[in-house]
Length: 132
Image (cartoon, rainbow, N blue to C red):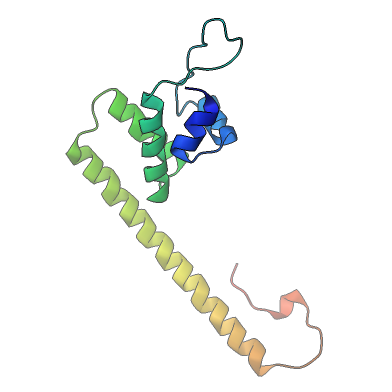
């Protein structure tokens, strides 16, 4: 299938599909005989792109997705390994949620301080005591 059809089937733009080829997330298809430089994408690419989308929606980075796809391709990604990967991802997300919560609390405190100082004067950025 051509890239336009692949794009429609998967919801990825043509540029994204080409980018995934460039970074090796999907294999470069063989050229169609007699059709110049058109690439003939095999059906398996559709499922691979759908898997990539699912992992992305779950918060995995492209590098993490690459690792999962490599493990799957060499047939060492069993359920117990995938459980470990998911648990590690959850732990990382929990840490990020905590970091974001702390940043939000600090921002809310700064907001309250600014509301107490509410005047029409212009303040400089250093007046905000934001944590670095």
